[in-house]
Picture 1 (cartoon, rainbow, N blue to C red):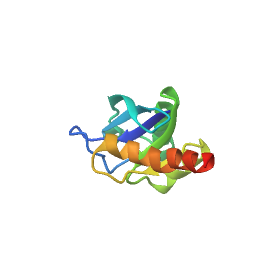
Picture 2 (picture 1 turned 90 degrees about the vertical axis):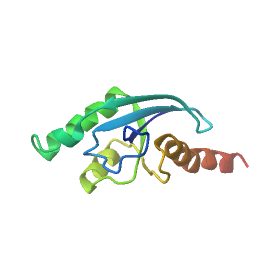
Picture 3 (picture 1 turned 45 degrees about the vertical axis):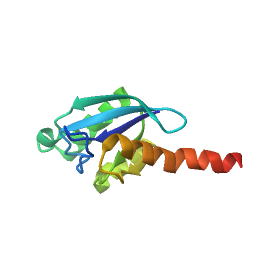
Length: 121
């Protein structure tokens, strides 16, 4: 599964979803481990105020579709972005650890791997 998280250059989780200057796309295996990691300078911080909120959300939607994102991990997303993700059926999972990669793994394990293990019991 491809998972997107807003990140800072030092690898920590960026607290701003729609205004993130950079995001990472993690490929996560069935056990919740990150197997591939790519960062992208999206400049959503700069682009946020260039145009309408709808056009900015469309920009984010394009990115999510182009990268086949199956879940997002973030510390915060505004209500409009939460509605957009829900309409796309992309879960928004909590970023609970300071380091972005670890936060992705924790979110996926807590949400999917633990649920899968419970179903198999």
